[in-house]
Image (tube, rainbow, N blue to C red; front, side, top):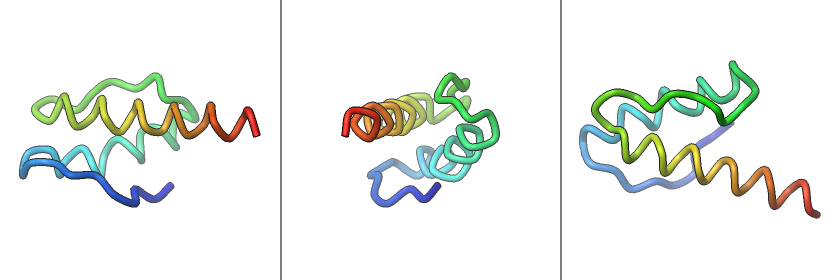
Length: 58
């Protein structure tokens, strides 16, 4: 999985690397947020979930 675009604070950048890896490894968006960049983690998780739902409908 490749994160194409996400605007985050310096702290949020940590989520850019970790959250996609966790989602792929678990094969699920039911992953825990990264401590510190919690909001960025949730934004990424929700975006992936919405993309999966859209792909499923098409």
